[in-house]
Image (tube, rainbow over all chains, first blue to last red; front, side, top):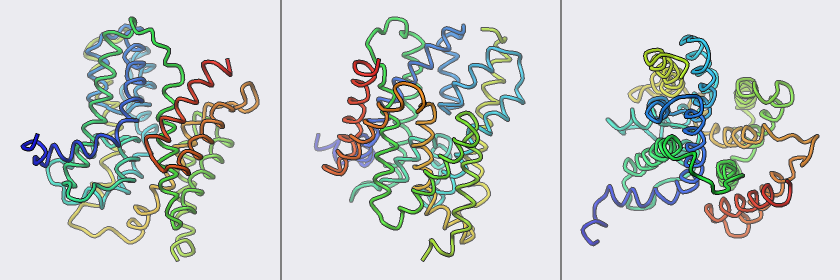
Length: 233
Length: 111
C-alpha cells in the first residue's frame, strides 16, 4: 500500500475516480441501453462496442442506429454527426488553456472530450500534490471506459437484466445540474450561466426539442460576444 | 444487420469523423505555440458556465409541461438537488439524492 500510494499515476486515478462516479452510473445505464438497442437491430456486441470505442459520442450513437438501419449514406452520417456534435466546438475553446502542454496524451483527451468529461474537467481542479496531467487523463480514461464497458454489457447480457432502472438515467441530468450550481458559486459566472439557460430555453421554444442545439449555441455566442464589454467589467 | 460489414464500418468511421472534427477543430485552429486572440480567451473563460446551463436545458428537452405529469418529477428532483447542494455542498450526495428521488417519483408516484 505504501508503495502504491507513492505512485503518481495511482494517486491521480484515486483523486479523479470520485468525480466520475455519477458518470459511471449514467454511462453504464445508457451504455447498456445502447448495446441492447443495437442487438435488437441485428448488430452483434462487437459492432456496438466498435461504434462506442471509435465514435464515442453518446447521443449521436443513438441517432446513428437509424443510419445503420436504412440506406447506406456515409455523407449524411458525417453531416448529421457534425451537427449533433457541434457543441463540442465550445468545449474545445474552453479547454485550450487547461490541456496546454500535455504533450502526447492531449490527442486522447481531445478525442474523448464528451459532455460529461468536459463538465467535470472544466469544473474541478486536481487536489494539491496530484499530477495535473494524470488527473485529467484519469477522468477521460474512466469515462471512456465506462461507456465502452456499458455498451459491452448491454450487447451480451442486456436481455437478462431485469432490475428496474427506470429513471436512473436522470443521474446525468443531476450531474449537469450540480456542476451548473458549482459554476454559479462564483458570482462573476452567474450572468453567463443565466445566458446559457435563457438562450437554450428560447431555442427550445422556437425551434423545438429536435433542433435546439445549433440555434441555442448561436444565440449563446451572440449574447456573449455582444455583451463582452459590459459583462467583462 | 441491414448494412454489409464494410458499409457498417464506413458508417461508423463517418460518424466518428464528424464527432472528431468538432472536438479537434478548436485545438487545430488555436495551437499551443500561438497566443489565441483575446476574444477566444474570453470565450474559453465564460463558455463553461453558459454550456452547463445549455446542457441542463438540453437534458430536459423531452419534458412536456402541458401533459401529465407536467414535468413535476423533474421539477421536484431538481429542487431536491438545489436544496441538498445548498445544505451540504457535496457533489455526490446532491446527485445521488436527486436521482433517487427522481426514480421513486417515476416508479411509484407519477405512473
